Length: 156
Image (cartoon, rainbow, N blue to C red; front, side, top):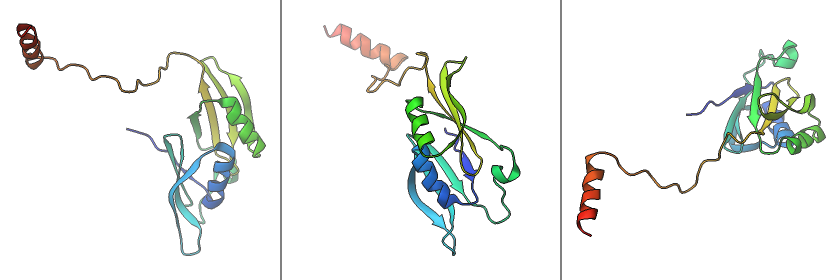
């Protein structure tokens, strides 16, 4: 199961380019465009995480036009200081410099050109262990497992 954010932009085409440059997201799949060539829907990814974005039409008002944030995105990254340097170099509006938090993460905040707030964080604790690769499956419990064990021990 996953939760996939869908951000709305007045200019989704420009957002595609900016998010790639500043935050390292990569475009996946084909962007859908209307008859005028305007991007109406697209998909981007950062690692295994997916972000959908689109332009809903002329009546849409982004957070910058509204004058306040409408959401925050919290994104885990491997190296928050390196990510911060990339975003700052690309001209992201930094709203919070990298800092260690009381909950065990190093985090910074940035605002994209249309006013969406992004927080990028790196876990500094060791309580999150990476998934084991090639882990052996557990033996089947119950009668079948007991029968197999008995057969093996009686054949010795």
